[in-house]
Structures are given as structure tokens and as C-alpha cells.
Image (tube, rainbow, N blue to C red; front, side, top):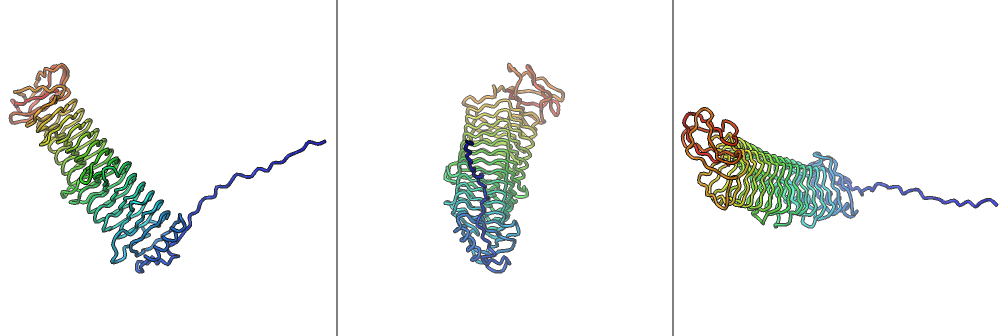
Amino acid sequence: MPPTTTTTTVAPPPVNVPRTLPLVSVMTQGAKGDGVNNDTAAFQAALDNAGLATVGRIDVPPGIYVVGPLTVPAGVLLVGAGPGSVLRRAAGTTGALLSTSGTHVTLQSLHLDGGGIQVLAAATRVRIVDCEITGASDPAITSAGTGVIIAGNVVSGAATDAIAVSGPQTSVMGNRISGSGSAGIRLTGNGSANNATTVIGNDIAVPAGHGPAGIVVDGATGVTVSDNRVGGSTSAAGGVGIGITSDSAPVSNITVSGNDVSSIGADGVVVQQAQRVSLAGNAVAGCLGRGIVVGASSSVVVDANTVSGCGATGVDASGTTDVVVTGNVCTQNTSAGITLGGANGTARSVVADNVCSGQAKGISATGLLDGVVLSGNQLGGNTTTGLSLVGATLSGGTTSLPLRCIHAVTVGTNATAVAHGLPYVPLSVAITPTSAGSVWQAAASDATNVYLQASTSGVGCELIVG
């Protein structure tokens, strides 16, 4: 008897069919795009129809569409063809041209002329990408939603802020901003609203005489500002490059790193009334005021920044507590590389391993230094002195590992050896001339002496070595 054969039919694997979004065209809804007729009703009808489809795409062909304020429903992708797809504000209308309170909304490759975009607080996961916004009378982009992405947009000529964010978990990336009447990018919060918000890789041109800043973080927490370029003009006094402040609410847990700030009409990077802030690896150059300013703040780290060619101090840490200023290079700034103390003093802080040269003073301290450690700073090559403590009061163990003052030193035009009396080679040598002329280090110090040279014979000076 022949064996029984059983045949099993195996179903083919399922085919993944690409999901297509329901498509609604503004033209099929009656939009003209001729720059004359008012297309508001046609646009809103297209948006509403796409919203009814749960997830719908609206294509905006090239043209000039005269519209008033429009509401974008949840799940809608409104996609233009680039700068040629222009939404122009209709005469007599106010407010944002596009606003949404929905989720999963995308606004892409559109040109908005005379009006901006508003993301309301109820909105989540909104994307605003590759749009161009010109001449907005309000902030060009305002976002109070959660999980919003604002990326690759070009914003010019906004009457106030270019991008204003108050919602959490927002990413502001790769935007180009110019000609704003106020801030390029402004983050505000109630002390906790901006957790996990990032501002990365934006290019901001600050107009001459305008303010308050290229980037403002006001009353927000948990923010990262990284790898941005903020450039300005020193032809007139203006706003700061990057400002961290608590004008509206406490600000803390902020990282500012890898930014390039140049030619600002005031200070480069400013931290005021803040806690737990890291300023690391930034390049600040050619600002009309100070390079980096930390005031009325605590637990701030200023590390490995380069500050050059600014009109005042490179790094100003006056009026601070628990601040670490380390590994910075401050060169060719007008008054000093680093400033400490001031009217409110500097307390429980470390200033170490910085290089300060080409200024009038390397480190300048006035007022109260309470528990401040000065260590390993290289202060040669300044025109007046390396370390100036004129008018400073030292208390609480302030030291420079340690400081030793050598009075009534007379220096000639040839190298003059001065015994320093320390049990090691000095890490820093601060020179304060006491008579006409200048004095500098003629050679590296050794275990016994420091070596000085003067512009003319018989220049008097005092030394602080440590």
C-alpha cells in the first residue's frame, strides 16, 4: 500500500504596503494663489477636510496665497514647495497666520509673509521645519506646546522675538535668524517648564543697536544651548550674545557649550541670578563689552572657554559664590583677563589653570575675596601686572598655593634674578610696578628665583608669587 502524502499550503508572507496619507489640495478647494484674491476660506476648508481624515496632507503649490489667520487641526501635514509657496497676510488681519492646538501637526517648506506661527499649550509633537518667515509683527514662531521641533527655518525681520518658546521638551535646531527687533531665540518658563529643551546649531545675526540678545533663557530650567553661532555688530551698543537670567522665575541647570559669540554690541555671554550653570568650550571674541559675565549667581562652572579682543574684561566673576573658573584662555581684552570681587565680592570659588595675557592685567581683584583659591594661572605678558589685588580684602583662607608678596623690588633692563622663597617653582607670578615703566618676566622661574626685566633701568615693583 503506497504511503499517504500530506500537502500543506503555506501562505506567503504579508506585503507591507506603504501607508499613503489622504491628500487635500488647496487648489481643489478653490484657492487661487494669485496674490490678489483672498484664499482664507479655501485654505481653511482644505485644513478642515484634512483634519477630518485624521491624518491628512495638504500640498501648497507655488503661488502667493493671501490669507488671514488659519487654524491647523490635529494630524495635518501642511507642505509647501519651498520659498515659492507664499502665505501672505491679508490686509486688516492680525495674529499668527497659522496656529494649532493639535497633536502630530507638521508645517513644512512654506513661506509666511507678514505673519507667524503659533503653537498653543495643548499642542504636542508639532514640527515646524524648513519654513521661511519674513516681517512678522509678532514673534515669528511662538511655541507653548510639548515636544515641539523647530528646525531648519529662516526667520528675518521679526518685529519682536524671532522664536519664543515656553513649552517643555522643545528642540530648536539649525535655524537662521536675522534682523529681529528683540531676541533671536527666547526661552521662558515658570522655573520648571523648559525641562529637556535644546537650542542647538542655530545661526543668529544680532542687528546693531538692537537687543536684548541673540539667545535669552529667562526663568527656565534644564536647558541646553550648544553649538550656536551668534554674531553682531559693534558699530552701536546693543544686546548681549547669550543671556541667562531669572527676570521672570528662577533659572537653573543650564548648559551653554560650544557656542561661537562674536562682535556683539554689549557683553558676549551673561549669567545673572542663576544656579547650576555650565559655560564650557565657548569662543567669545570682539564684543564691545565683557566677554563672559557671571553675576549674583552660584554653582557656576566657567571652563575651557576662549575669550579675546573684548572691550572690557574677558571673564567677570564678581559678585558670585561657589564658582569655578578654570582652563580658560583670555587674551587681548582691554582691561583684564579675569575680574573677581567687586562690590558684592567673590566667595568659595576656584580660579585655576587659566591663561591670561595681552591685557592690562591678568587677574584683577577688588572688594572681598572670601575663601577663593587662585592656582596655576599663567599671567605673563600683560602690560600692567599679572595679578592685581589693589583694593582687595582677603579672608576665609583665600590663597594662591600660597601667595607670597615681595616688596620693593628694583628691576633693570637686563634679566634680574629675584629670590621667591617658595619650596617649589611658582605657578604664577603677578607683577605690580610701583614707579614709571613696565616690568615683565624675562625667563621662566626656577626653584630659587623669578627673572624680571624692565623697560628702563631702576623700575620699582611688587611681586605676588604662588
